[in-house]
Length: 208
Image (cartoon, rainbow, N blue to C red; front, side, top):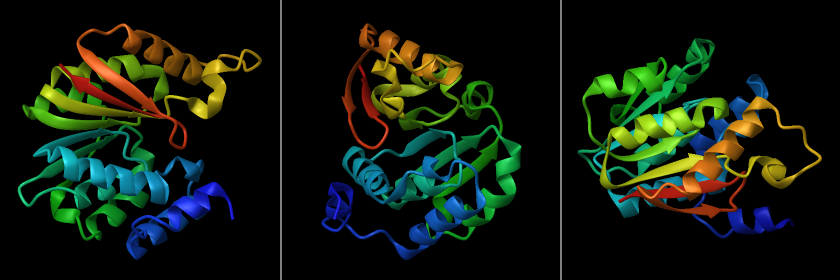
């Protein structure tokens, strides 16, 4: 038994619908491991239950796994708006979201969140950034602008398989985007932040 298997056997079980979504994601989509999965999904749900946001913004829907997990944790008046810039994802993702138990709490939008999310005119309490790593700083600035004071941002993949500290790994644009984001964030006095070494790195950020 691996440590990950041990952890997953000692936390809230993964709902069957999400397990089926995770399997379908890995079977039918490239880079299926990008889906949050059992452990991170349960953490996202619990963070929502702790923060108790009314409105959540997600940038990067992918297969919808993380959106459903966060929507599970919302109060009755809560809602999640999730943006996916890749329109080729829609045929796979939309049915999984719309048939999920949390469908009434999720609005799934195909489009660029950097330009389209501010047009919603919503002040968000929480955000999950998991989109194009090359534009993480731009996404972060947009998200901060629509986030209330004391609101929270979760930024995924901020350790990037350890490549952020691997001098032998060529700095492709995705890796460099993460490195630049992390370096910028550590000196951003508008927020406080902590990086959790969970899966591929998850940074928790609070707007001052």
